[in-house]
Image 1 (cartoon, one colour):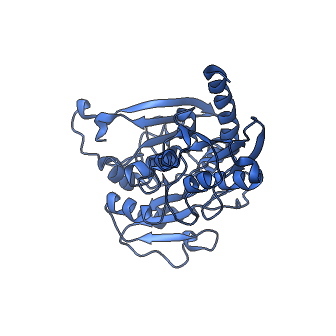
Image 2: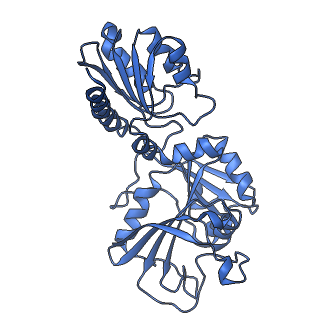
Image 3: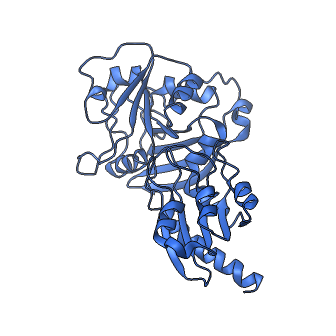
Amino acid sequence: MDQQAQEQRDVALMRRALELAARGPVADPNPRVGAVLIDAAGEVVGEGWHHGAGTPHAEVEALRAAGGRASGGTAVVTLEPCNHTGRTGPCSRALADAGVARVVYAQSDPNPIAAAGARTLRDAGVEVVGGVLAVEAAALNRAWTFAVSHGRPMVTWKFAATLDGRSAAADGTSQWVTGPAARADVHDLRAECDAILVGTGTVLTDDPRLTTRHPDGTLRARQPLRVVVGERDLPAAALVLDDAAPTLHLRERDPALVLKALAGREVRHVWLEGGPTVAAAFLAAGLVDEVVAYLAPALLGAGAAAVGDLGIQTIGEALRLVPREVTTIGEDIKVVATVAPQGGR
């Protein structure tokens, strides 16, 4: 096979591996990974994907399916095969021991603990090609890649407000600023995160349940960790303390220390839903990476602002966002943006 034909085959097999990887859980300590094994004749003999932390890695699943036909074949994997022993053994060693002659991977492993699998394979005499559809593979594990690269969870701040930036009316009422379509979208996005975070003020004022639910109100099978930050005690009857989902009360006000504690629990993606005070604290600390805003076509003229004082005195100091998506959802407007580098990143 000439080089061009081989490259085309690698891309086609990698697209299949990405399809397999997408079957894995979105919110998990481990990345979503897919693998395809072909034998020396070019026939697909094994496929696999990672089903979540503690389960066999994608490469191991594919090797089990391939059996002896893996020897002399090619493994196509969406992430550089791991090189460490954790809940499972190193995939780089498993591939080499199976006699795989060639390994093609997409994204290099950003995790310093698991990296260097490609080097181990090369040292074992395996031909290794990296970077095939790397951008697509990284996008599949956006939060995980961020978390292991930065040593802390990725933070998405969600808020709902009127067009004049009010998240509640003057009398404190806030249900509902936005319509049912926007609220359903929030539950879809919550479900993709590892933790939902609010401050004690939100719990004491709104008594939220902080669960992910279906449109009919029933609970989804998987619930993110509910995190409440702040020094005040929570009422024993607070809904956030029910048995619908696990809850962690961190008696801490420093956003960096909060994220450090969550990183220690392998939380990769935090969905920040706290009120204006908590939002301002994370923004001022440069610890908000993405903003998801739902804007209702309504005006209040008074009431709580979506975010508290950021210490900004002049327009030139404004915390600028880079819009990534602007859409209508029901009667509301949804804006997804990232924080521009000058915003304290």
